[in-house]
Length: 192
Image (cartoon, rainbow, N blue to C red; front, top):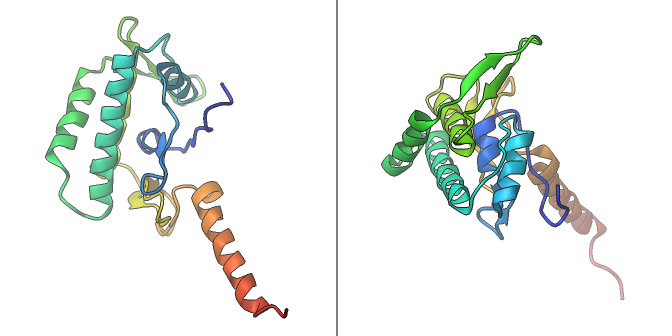
């Protein structure tokens, strides 16, 4: 994958990994799928390989991503789901033509339609979003505690008290800031 783009932040939940393709939503946003080819790359590493993507399909992907983010964020704080976001998610889910396949290893793999791969992949992502927002999976939606991130993530920890969307990025950044602040405080004023 081209190095001029930021790394993907992949998690174990497809829908929230997809919303994570736009990060730092409350700060200086980082777009991880700025081009059609970059969406193809993300879909491939997410188990939804497609041959190609058009600019129009990328626009559709962004629309779905933002709808999932809006609905998941509302669900995370027990707010009313935005009607427009629900409509978009349902439309994508109902138009996808993907089939779930069981592998010999006992895992699920997706088979996408030959003619409309991107739309089918987006349908799988929408269906995944429905399952987590509707509370069908074991876990809890939460919002990242980082004031510049605020990403919706699916907490499957035993206590369901995770604070960060990703410990290696947001969590580490916050812990480092706290450590640096404590070092400045404990060092006291410097002598001239």
